[in-house]
Image (cartoon, rainbow, N blue to C red; front, side, top):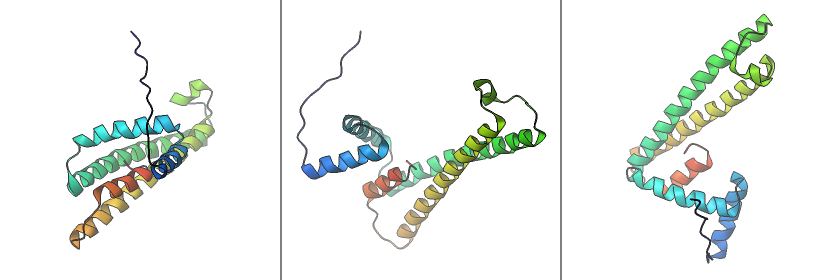
Length: 154
């Protein structure tokens, strides 16, 4: 059975709607999809440990995932690079889809850059948290988490 999506009118302060519109545009979502995405994330965040400790744990976990992905991509770049140098048709996953070794190498190198940037961003954010804690400065966890989300780290 297919249950239709619920629809209802919603009043928002104009400034909040503007912020949602801007965020929706940056993320490539419709306003409705952006609101649904943010509401769903609010329920996910309930499972996070409270405060700076929870944020730090979440950032560290994401950094590890991104590091592992970057390592895997680096190995793929090495393999594709050697296949390109050999100039042979050697089998690899993208070839069946019509992708050449050169195209696969360029795509993989681009993805590697993205994941290395995510690792660097997470490292920088974790460093900022550590410095703030070391100096006894209060951290606005929600604002910091939003920065991390905007950086693509969370």
